[in-house]
Image (tube, rainbow, N blue to C red; front, side):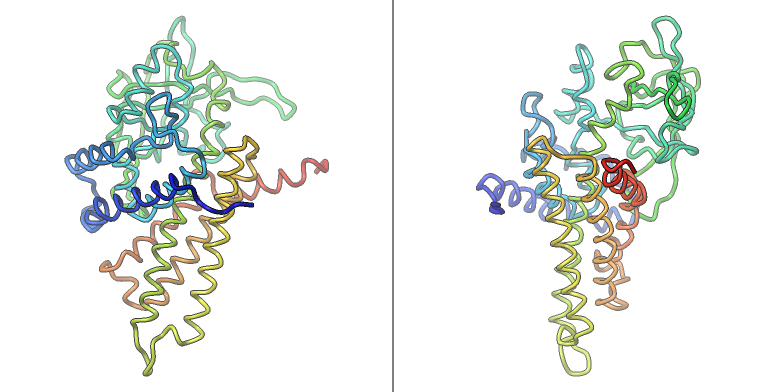
Length: 387
């Protein structure tokens, strides 16, 4: 098994790392202090990311994206993950690959402008009463002639306040299954400003300051049937092309933040002196560093393995779930131990550790909780045996 990186992958890592440290690190303190990413700063950094060739690197070359293979993309995401989420996700856009389901006029209106950085999308799945249980969503898309009439509420919708359109998932009918009646889901593209659709302020969040969430409210919002993304009632098929990739993206970003936290902890361990010696000499600190390094290495290998399988066309839901579960729980451990090694200083905003520690908490919740990932893994283990 060859673990070496190609020259192109080494260049991707260097280019992304240099951009993050030169262009994004300097603005972390402002975003943390204000809880906002100024629109003019966002626009400036987005233009720089486009000029650097870093924008839409996850999208295929045939639609104007970077065309990275999955392993190269994970290496790229890891470097971006080292900085504030608001900065790297807002300014170095990676449009949802759900948009690859766009057909006909949708490509010119949504897909291609998103890849060029001219339009930004947001995804709306979660509802107040339907988080991981998407089949229980109540937002409806009722067919009336050549239109869909949308009613309902979504919440926790990331960066909807500066998006140009939403990829909405709504219940569009019912079907009988072995487990009884279940809802059919349809994905719909809806422009901001469409009558009957409003974006409301969301909640204050302990994680990822500046990366906002919103509440979306639909009241007899009418869109043409041509707004359906993919096929009517086939929203889950559309979503499944995205969920695996986004879980891998979360895992990769966690690697970057954990590596930064470990580097800070190592440096502190050789600089901080207590009781007449550097604290790294104490077994209580040295063993923490060793455990952090082991967990980080394990998570990185599992994430890269899932990416390699994705490139080979053999990746399963279990592979993605394992990577996401391990990397998110690893980050929580590494961030906490790094902060502990720093003592009181770790909690001060002078260092990025308290931000990394806070930001780590959401990773075990969004894009499928740790419990959901464990369910996917255990189901994959037991079903082949009839369990």
